[in-house]
Image (cartoon, rainbow over all chains, first blue to last red):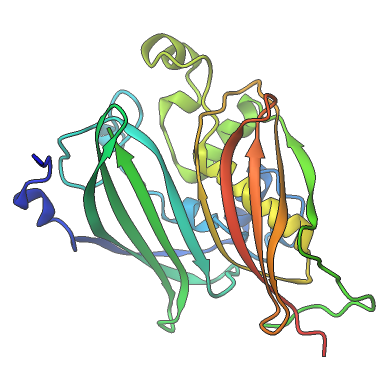
Length: 151
Length: 144
């Protein structure tokens, strides 16, 4: 079978972005908890970060000139793929330690896999990005694997 | 990790249903969510662009916010009786501002030795279609 994945493209497996180190604040936790409609007081009052708060903490803050007309910025971790239309993917997240205001967390993202599958209406490219979040003691706090699909 | 003690045991049975809760996000909620992320993707706040350029029927509810509701489904049910240790989910179909979504789920596996349960959760739309399926693992507090 003819493949869309050149060796040059596959050489990107293993590339990393980060580490990014960020401070967890009570105010950001509150904002996040309110925005998602969370009902639990420990989150709404900012005493503890709810699950998925790390998405807000580590979303890339890029300059306005780095945003394209659709408002998105390029992910520096990703190579240029021969397919470009994104389809729904999935995530698996392991919550190992709780997160509290005052915590400094460091995230590193790794492109761990690129593979191809035959879809109903043509080839699909799958790629996986792992995010590992540790605290200042070097302990693992969150591990996430995100699978994205292009058609 | 410590868990709060409760006088009555939290009895979980295989097949138990998790409570349902409705969500009808509006522009304000969607804006606030993407603002705290710093996500400028126009399909979440610029209705003219979203419908005329991208061809969507309306503003697109952010996928990770729907993912968050799956987490809330588990935690609203679990309370302080245990801890959410993992979640696997995907955004299967898009949902738009104006739609009413709801969460729900049920217990699909129980292991009393390890005090662990697996819970299947979903976000459904008004047509009853699953917008986002998920599966979570929770660890119950030790009752000793």
